Amino acid sequence: MDRSRKAAFDTLLRIQRDGAYSNLALSAVLDGETLTATDSAFASALVYTTLERQITIDYELSLYLRQPIKKLRPEVCTALRMGAAQILFMDKVPASAAVNESVRLVRQNKNTVYAAGLVNAVLRKVASGGLRLPDTDDDFARSVRYACPEWLVSLWTRAYGRSDADAIMADALGDAPTYVRVNTLKTTADALCETLRLAGVQAQRVPTLPDALLLTKCGAPERLQAFADGLFHVQDAASQYCCEALDVQPGQTVYDVCAAPGGKSFTLAEMMRGTGSLTAFDLYPQRVRLIESGARRLDIRNLRTAVHDAAETDTSRPPADRVLCDVPCAGLGVIGKKPEIRFKSSQEIDKLHELQYNILCISSAYLKKGGRLVYSTCSLNPQENEEVCRRFLHEHPSFCTVPILPDVDKRVQDNMTTLLPHRSRSDGFFITAMLKTE
Image (cartoon, rainbow, N blue to C red):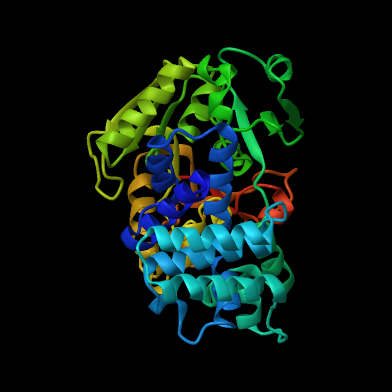
């Protein structure tokens, strides 16, 4: 039995049976195995390829099954999906190995001879037929082509137009770029580039983000010595743009109201040159401890933390010069990194905008006159983004929007910025900066 495939199988089974998050399920399984780095990398790639392409895979399998795939036993369903993922989307894996190992997984899990025969027959047909997509051009066909739920295909087409919607979905199937933020309290971008070069990592400056680096051929950045030394933290370009939009200055009082896991707080503290007062809040104590751990590694000393529900008003809080309101959201802009988001229903996100609006209203009350507030999400959904901000501005006439990020390729409506992944080369993100004028 191939141990890397077994690890991937166990991970996918946990996700299917228990609704576990992919990253946590994978870490739990790999921590219990003694795999080589190569085998661990293959197991990870197999898990994420299977999840990312599951909608397409299920369509392909349906062409050869007499019953819906979801009615099969979880072990059989998982083996079929894994096998099809290797055959259709992992070019370096021989089809014969994908078929044979999938059959072994089913047998090992005490399934019937019939189940093993089913897996063998169906996967051989998949290997023979290759990738077969619908020959129509409607939302269903696009859903299968881009492995994206049909309701989301429709939403993005209405919001951004057919061309950008297709480009967003295609981009989510590719490898995401790896960005890091230089810890300017300890080093410079040029010095970190050289440190990483000596470690065998390619790093290049990002023209629109002076203290950001794009890494290639680095593996997991968290395993680098420069990370352990606190010379950088991993942060997507979109999140760094969000921090740029807040325009913090040294010596200011700043609140990050939904801060965990802390990346934006760290960047803001560095932009403040370690001066002033920055408070990072989060609802859960364990997530606050995660922020504290990161701040210690980076040696950030102007950052303090507090456990607080952003949807509840804190009247004891002194007014701030800047407030970052990066609210809980559906995460539709990061489906390329978190493939399980693809399996959410539209009903699951329909009520989020009320929570988001409430947090924005409460957060705005902490701001001084002349202060700046940034509202942001990592979701590409007008209901969570423009609609929340327009409602807020209508009901709070003392606030007005201001233009941001002049050098970034973005979509702008009424000074409200949407970063589309294929254009900004970042996560999908929404950012609006507002000033309190009276």
